[in-house]
Image (cartoon, helix red, strand yellow):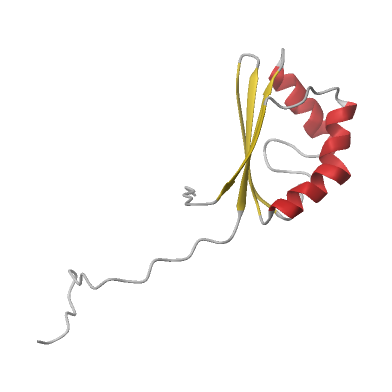
Length: 117
């Protein structure tokens, strides 16, 4: 049997490996959560539009809010990189902004991703 050379070649291809990454979910519940998010970003010198001094091991950052709830989802090169950022920059910025303790802190392993360009 000759190998297929047309458009309908259904040979299995090896799935692409996802990069090793850790996903962090932070949830805050506080009055005027969006204002707190913007205040912390200002202290850090970053902007929700992606400009500023974002840490290089941070691959993706998404924040969303409704009412008094704020969810932040981040994809980091490693949990250790986020912990270093927390100690050196984010923790002090949260303290300076008088942010409450997060209602949720949960880590996941990256399982998939899609980004439109």
